[in-house]
Image 1 (cartoon, rainbow, N blue to C red):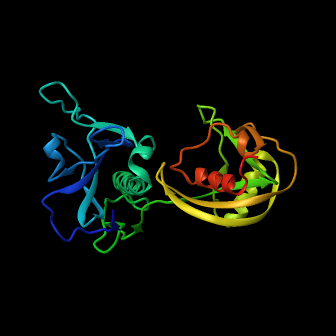
Image 2 (image 1 turned 90 degrees about the vertical axis):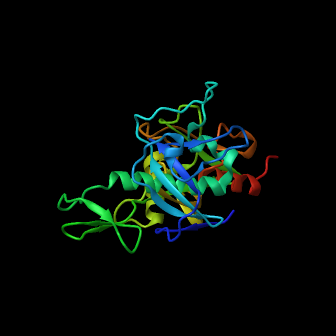
Image 3 (image 1 turned 180 degrees about the horizontal axis):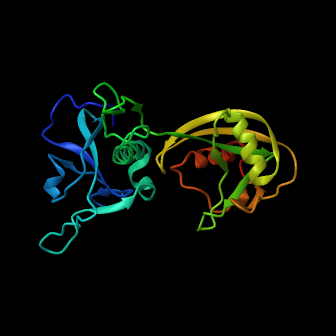
Length: 278
């Protein structure tokens, strides 16, 4: 599969890929490992009315669009009463669609959500319109230009010898543990944000911070910067606000972990590869 990002559709296909969302849930056909996204002339083929479509690029040369389905639309059933399609959260589909398609649909979700929420100029209140030259919104009155919102965040695998720091966030409902993450504040470097977040959330200092990789994460609009670091000093003490439990875990002691869709799991798997269970 070859995906080429794009802003403008310069050719009309007989059929195009459509990534259609109801709130943050995407429409798909099939089940299990046969998940397919619709190829349509228009969403009206499914009896759906949508917001203004946005072109996101091409998949193997075929155009791809995204749009929001109006909340009033109901799922279409065939004559036997079988639903023709299903809506699901994107994260729940990761194991069936794989990383490449997950990234494409994530892009579609981000662009769709941004397009629908950025209707009026934050400066003067006038309507915004799509730029004629790039992926941006332009104010029809004052000319202000705004781009899709990305919020930089850092996420860090902290090691202490052959153990990894894992923490339980109060928002996790399934006993899941992950590594420490947080948004970068104005004026901070990524490294400064790492030191601050880890100190604030679990009360320790870290050293030897190294870049690992990055991931766009459309939940809702994060740009995750992954790092590794080593324990320096201090005693683990969860802040009780965001983090209520934290500990050092060897590879054979890991609790419930994040999905393989996330860079957090990639960092954890990297640790496991370097520190296999004994």
